Length: 99
Ligand code: HBI
Image (tube, rainbow, N blue to C red; front, side, top):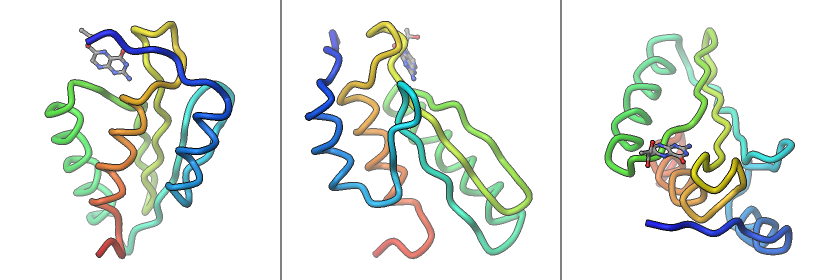
């Protein structure tokens, strides 16, 4: 599936729908704080499952009780694309407090 880089305006419009996500350099990024290390570790596994489903993968960091992601699209030369936002929206559904 070919994917086009998003314009700055398109990125800003999509970020406005995703509180907590921001542009860090040429990637979209968010950190989550969980209640325990185990909960954070479980979230990493759930994110990994979504990433396999989407065939799209973040750079993912597990802290003591934090999970941090940055996402770009290698196949679009490292630009931000709609594939990154699709992953971000799916990760939001897993996030603490969702629903
Ligand atoms: N993940 N973030 C990211 N960017 C990609 O371009 C990408 C990926 N995961 C898998 C993937 N591309 C595959 O389509 C290729 O590695 C085959």
